[in-house]
Length: 156
Length: 80
Image 1 (tube, each protein chain N blue to C red):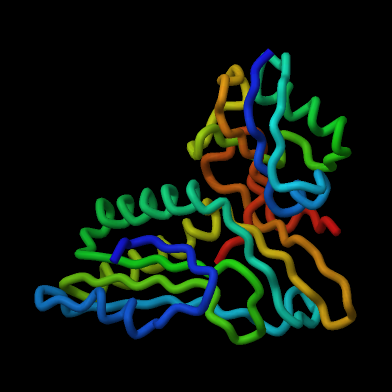
Image 2: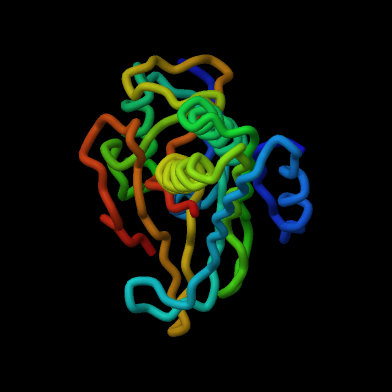
């Protein structure tokens, strides 16, 4: 199983978990990101994720390489959904295995933070009152042309 | 003239009304290519809000156009 994946349909989480099991590792840390029912005070009915898949996979592999180098993890998975998701659906799944727990927590945190900053993935939220909006979160640490910005624009 | 393909995602795809288009451009850099397309399609994002990729690798805005390449302008991301 490749470490990074973009999935257009729900993924069997148990398969992801099992693909990481190994006898030299005693620590397994997972982060699951779910679709929440509100964002910035607005009620969300669901959302569409869209990815520039080729670059998203390359960049995710790069993030996993960095986590391996920094924290000495044994293995990891990063799965991101695309397509229409409903409240409660799993949008992202990060799993990390290490010999001991400290590195598992640190690496898992590092990976999800970098995924949010760097992967070319976009989210269009659909609101209960009927509107939709692209959510702008970040342009990542490598962006040189301006300061890092959070939710600077909501474009219809 | 350089012939290349531009792919659009998210709000740029909606504003362009298409996911990809074949372009012949005399622009001397990726930044000036975006300026041409911004005017043509009425894009509201500036290069300061975007990143750019060529053939699935992040690129520099000042880079010249490459014949036959695929260029993607990357709006602010929102994964996770």
